[in-house]
Image (cartoon, rainbow, N blue to C red; front, side):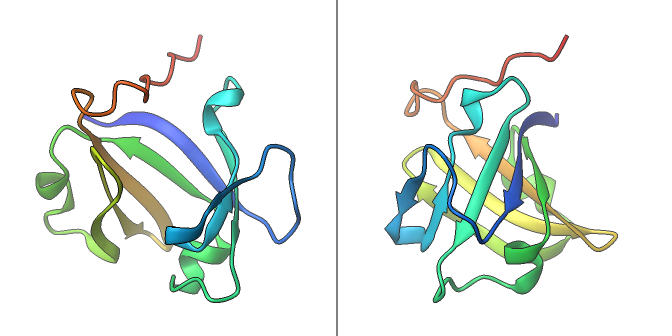
Length: 118
């Protein structure tokens, strides 16, 4: 199962509603504050990510089983847990970064599933 979660768009500019994430060395916007899941991302100067992640927009999908979803994929960022109840990894598909996310909603009741686009 792949379920759309957000699109991350890197920027070097400041933006409204900035949320600093010091442990990730980046600043983001809340992707749930708009009907299309657009998240602006500004990476800090010392952010330890590949240029593909820092420069190219990515689409993020929720998956039921992250480890299975990563099988036979080209890894850009290995599986990690940016926050409790959330595991993510970044893969490359035809030169584009794609984020895969596994969310344990029994732990993360605050992370509502993104509403279906109509």
